[in-house]
Length: 257
Image (cartoon, rainbow, N blue to C red):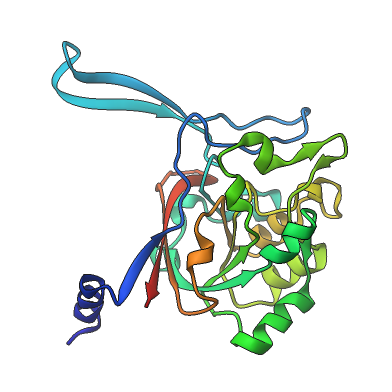
């Protein structure tokens, strides 16, 4: 049996299942909110063209408008100034849209401290129990934050001191970007950086280092609790937007049961 035939058989008999890691995309989908002096992304809008009526008697369809970085989305290297001149989302090789995943679960720590920051030592401790991060794969950072994805207020978790959401230290972001073998970072928050990262040096280090290294981001993921620490395969399919810095994306995980 060929490898592809074996995969089809495994999907048919349920020994491999598909977990959808994508948040629904609608006008209610939370969006990034930058400091007010910066430009802001658009919320998702759906505009009906026809619905089996005199505008089109046999068909239903819509126009839509949204920001590239709205909802569950893919960050391409050219999204950040450090990746200027790098790949746009249409230039990302297809083979880099499918890869193994390491799922690092720090949801308990985040439940105690929403400003929790992942450090290199946390990753090294995880590797001591699960093996090295996967070459050509994804580091998926589970924080339990997807439970907040129904609410703009809850997912941004902002007060007079700013946004309080988990992320990585500057040193950890640099290590993942420049020394680890993964091609991308996936998170459950609206962006790959911590809420406090606007005050880090550099500002938003996950963006600065990852995209400067030609690596990618996946944000606002769901259902990471359904994935094992190792062994899952991620399939991420952004729109092939010429010149685009990112795209809403349908992210699936193949999991062997």
